[in-house]
Structures are given as structure tokens and as C-alpha cells.
Image (cartoon, rainbow, N blue to C red; front, side, top):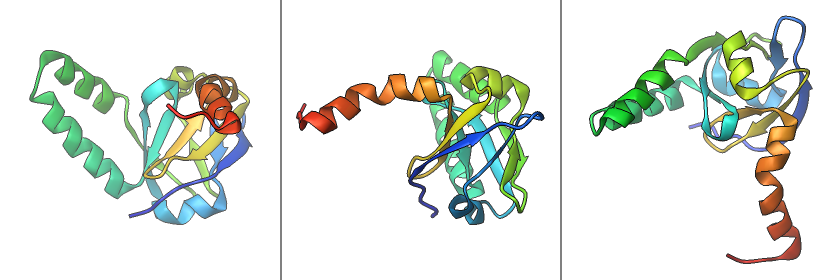
Length: 139
């Protein structure tokens, strides 16, 4: 299973495409799956990890109406995307809107997926943890 780590600053081109870092590209073998994800980012999954996510969503959909609706939303907003040899990935407009991706994009390794973040949103989300790390605070 592929593992991803590191943070990279990239830009969207005029057609809404971003280039993945070279170290991430091999895991996708030309195909990836792009989904809405927690805290307003996008997740880019390998085919294997996406299958695991689909199975988890299918199980979740059996538990309650809210979970069925969550699974429906997740599936309806998921897209199979091509990862070109150059690492370029086209991001559909509605997903760019969901994640507030404009000119700049942070491409972050998130262990089992790659996350695409609006830089300001990323800073807002991680600032409390960065303070805890720099000050050596425990829970």
C-alpha cells in the first residue's frame, strides 16, 4: 500500500489542473480518485485505497439515514481522474469550489492519501497543533 508524506506548494493552471510532486506519481499508475474530504480539502486516492473507502462507505450506508445520505454525497462527488506522466491532474470545477482552490494549492501527503488544500484553510486548521508542537504541550 502506498504511503504519502510531505508538503508541497503548487499552483492551479488556467484549466484547473495541478501537478503532483514526482514522489507521489508512481503510486497512481495513471489513475486516481478525487473526493471531497474532511475539513474542506480534497483527497486523492490510489485505486486500492479508493476501493477500501468505497467498501467502508457501503457499510456505513447500512446504519442510518444520515449515513446513507453521506455515502450518496461522497459517491456522487467522487471522480476518477487521470494522472498524466507529467503529474498533472485536472480538478473538476465543483471540487475546486468545495475546497476553495484558486491560484495556490498545498499538496500534502496524508499517509494513505494525498490531500489538496487551500493554503489559508490549511493554516487555520493546523495552527493550534503547530502551537502545541512548538511549545511542547501535551493534551
